[in-house]
Image (tube, rainbow, N blue to C red):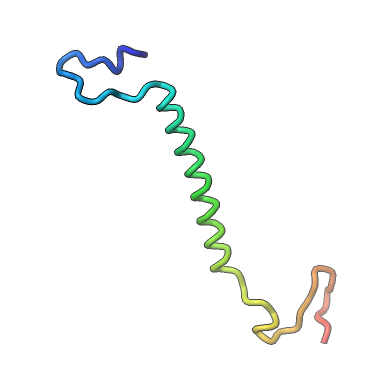
Length: 70
């Protein structure tokens, strides 16, 4: 694996990341991706939720009410 990072034709200007640093970057990228997806879905859910029944003026129904009470 080390042979991939060795410069054969030119001088090395910047040292490449080692395997542990690359693994840490991948883990951080995966964690940020999951966190970003969770935040995006929360924002979309908050924007797209319907208005509560009190604001609209419709009768309220609970999870166990089959017919709205008046």
